[in-house]
Length: 639
Image 1 (cartoon, rainbow, N blue to C red):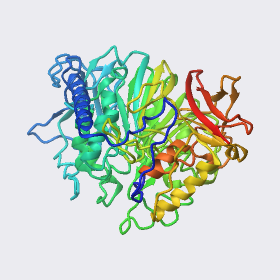
Image 2 (spheres, rainbow, N blue to C red):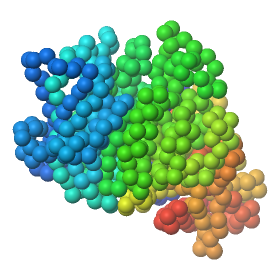
Image 3 (cartoon, helix red, strand yellow):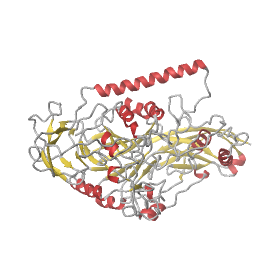
Image 4 (tube, rainbow, N blue to C red):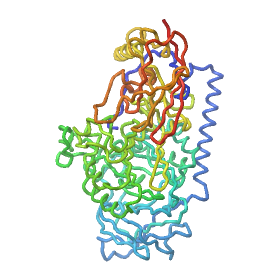
């Protein structure tokens, strides 16, 4: 996201808030010394187990490790404007093309031009300074990964190296090599039409404390899973939080995962001291990956895009609504959501090489179209319509990060802000914002598992998106950090008492004088509350158009809850009446954003004549694929 959110310190804490059993665990009061020691032992054991999982992935004999072969000879090249090389079958798995057979038909690119290898696996490409040469991994093959599980499929060519940058950038590469050869091995796993692929949003660690939060949270979850090993994981930008020296720590985290760990850049992965866009991601390129590229797994073609233009300029970034943001790239450099002409031309050529029956996954940091920031041109991609045109008639899904929210948008969804900002009427194919590993920037209480609750501004919890693919069809699922896949909803009671408290607490947080207002009994509803409109709320994180939520009170026939955002072109609804009361009651006390708007919130108005006493609500959330998730909430009605 553009800027990290800050929250004023809260000097008093209210009592723990009760909520539905399948939601996030409430942190217990401070433990005694003995219990604290036991918690520390448990945490150490969990961390050690996660590290052992990562070490197992690293030393597994089935993992193909290696590097791109860069050949240099003392003789001067006959043509310094052409790069040649070979894509070869690395049967010895030593990364050396010592007489091994070439692989025909592999796509090779310099980020501008695209060619396919000939019958001997050879290619020729125009060469220019500051280019990255890379291959598109074909299905049925694997590129090697390094010791950190980062795929090795590219070569940076920058003869003089990067300009003077704080974090180093790319070291001088010298003259054009005699050849750049790309090794592959054959793989039944990547040919399999059934795949599970992790899309990981916004790791965004600002320091090593947050690196450890990630290690104990979502990364430990990834270490414990092996369902995604052949497809791997794709971290969709904001890998770090401005401090690019933490790329080394991130690679240590990637070492814990199973399968290749791929990356694309975000607006917090920039060399902010770069004077031109051509060098704004040099350190990222040196450490992790090209700024954009593609790869094939099964019947899926992944396209990893760079949607961050920095510094933006008035001549290139002229979307309506930007104002003066991009007017002074030298004196006041800023970023914008955009794809430059070279990348757009590459994308067109890349897609021309792809069978039209394949599923196209378009991955980016800043989403092509975003819901929560729908009125901000900065947080959309200026060229979204052009990308849509290139994908016309294809089966596609867009995945992104950046907004630290969970958004599951279907083809045909519409929102008022899109037309005003980008001229987008309806989405041509599904768009999913993958949430964030960091959640709400690692805010909130630190749980007994060693990482913060970090509940997002949409009430979403930190976690991982998985695309389960069969052929060119997919189903999405979201896994909350530290939970299993059955945890898909968060229940609460939105009453006048809660709304009054939230207003008072917001005022107190801005000026903390005297005792902090407390919400003592969030699941107790008075008859007055019922008369003043009280809703049972269901935050269904992967809920979307085609999903439904049914509520049964005390075993009575279930009735339908109402989604607060229908995605039919209406404006974004914001306010405490559209909020997730559990999320807000945690955020106002323990810090973080305020979950006063969400595209995946359902409300069920409680009857005004509910009898005094205890009641149980059974909530069944059904997603667009017919999968059902049941949750219960017990609350009390008083006089």
